[in-house]
Image (cartoon, rainbow, N blue to C red; front, side, top):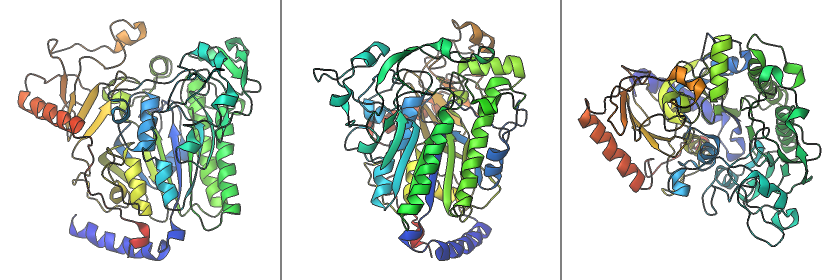
Length: 526
């Protein structure tokens, strides 16, 4: 840390000492976790976006915006495991992890794994999660047999035998929850789960024809079993309201205790179904309107925190679970000149940057200096250790094994040329690995690791020539070649071997995070 940064840090710490001197003054926490929102889907990240996102842009200007942030996986379920556990999915499954459909389970969050909820509750927090859960749930049929995934098995669920859910949010560290088991508007089972119970079981079939097909954007809305009254079009408005109700009730009934609310919005997952009040509000078509809905709801939530008198001391984190969906990426480029991946190669499911480089914003007016833009490399798994550091929880070495503490960066105490992370793991759709070390990136597989650019008609337009067709993997220098166009697998064999050895070590050692992590702990800052 240079001398000016150190002087600034001492000044900041002295301010924080008066603001956060006791455990009762720990920050409130809100995590807004979006779905299939690409690096280029916010106007503050993409000045050429087909629409504006003024409230999220303002949030970024009031805090810190990361430009080298990544999801742990290129699909939703494994990334959500990373958020809640601070670990890559192979720590749970041994390799990769698919996205659940129907009554898929059991949970990737295994019993005995320290979760984000467990950690925060140990420091006195009440924590709630609202929206898309999608890390797997255990369901049973009439004879007590555990059901596998698949839409057909949704008909076989015995709700009395299955609830309260043995591996739902309330058994994984959360005090309150109102969630859907899978993607709220894509994958049956279409039900709501409240605190481990199912108020209205699925008894009828959802028909796609009952929903508006806004300019053909109803793609990927699967028909299947659902509960009476299930609302596809207003899903995010409802999840927002559940979040606000949790916060409001907490401040009324649990004075002196901090809260953490996790809002898992479905935007911008397929199908594109913005609520009626947001339709036609942008020049970006239905998907632009969908992201506009997200922007408005984020703004309303920030305003609500201020109205309730807790905005100054609430740490709000905003990120996405992976890059943009293929059809969304294609249509937005072709019809609106909008690059949802922000110019990076690839999209959802791909191991290339567009599949996992995502927006990441943090705002905490009392502690995070405004106007910061950081190029520090970070991963969604880092949210775990960062929050542990803020609340003063000392992680054991076996906990959150892929999580680094980014709090010094957020507080402006870490120089940009002093990287927190010496390396980073990500995994693509099939569980294949990518590893970053500084400007170097090694992909331990051929091709995208996800989408088939040879077979998928709409993706053929984005296929690039393979300059090292015999290479079993890929090596890129992102500083010289941010588009991942020139595979240096053979030309830079020493660097490739170095990264292959590092990847093997990180996989076999059981962790990629450092040992002996010590929290900053706001109550200890003087």
